[in-house]
Length: 296
Image (tube, rainbow, N blue to C red):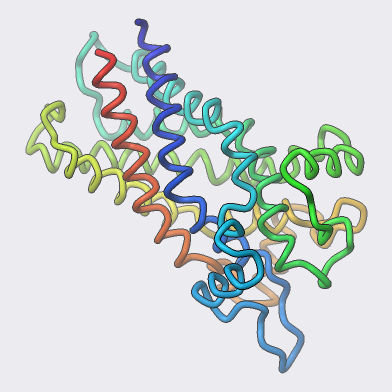
């Protein structure tokens, strides 16, 4: 079995594990990010992450925490397979000879390149997911086109395509790339650095599952610490109305959020995002490494 096929397979398994573990956290993050700014003297729709969980469970039961999972589940194979395969191919280009470990700096380059490639799949997938997850928080606060109760991922895609054509599915591509490129650069760099630290040297092939879980979880958290405000801007743009947009672009969204809510507005949902990133990325990297190793 060639390296490309091995990376495709292992990336698919890793992505599935990441999605199953992390999606409920992601739902709460998006609800917090996309809730409208309250009127003066009025409380916000959600007072915090736990309140968002309680309201979601009350209104939609546990399945509400998995709303919007159809879109990423349908594309998780492609996204994570692409991410790990592009990373693997860049690794091959950077190696002086087969089997030689790469430096942390080289893994940063691999992560950035993989992030650029996966952005093209991540953008439409996340647009669909975000609009499904956010519709409860947006109900009554934005035009009906956004607040409408979508029947599922394909229904969202149909609405978006009818309103804005194919380009509508790529709304938010710029902030998506601004998140994926540095985010994956940091994540893969930190992951490699932690593996070498835990192994006590360059050879990380003998690391146990506990070490891989720790390295993967901390690497995921470091990613969100780096790019979280960009993710807030991306979510705001992707749930914005097409016909009567509130934001003219990424910079405008950044300025308006900052003006209306201050710096804390750029960190709405930060707690759930970090809480999600640790177990979700730990599951992803562990599943990838175990699958990749089993394939030889």
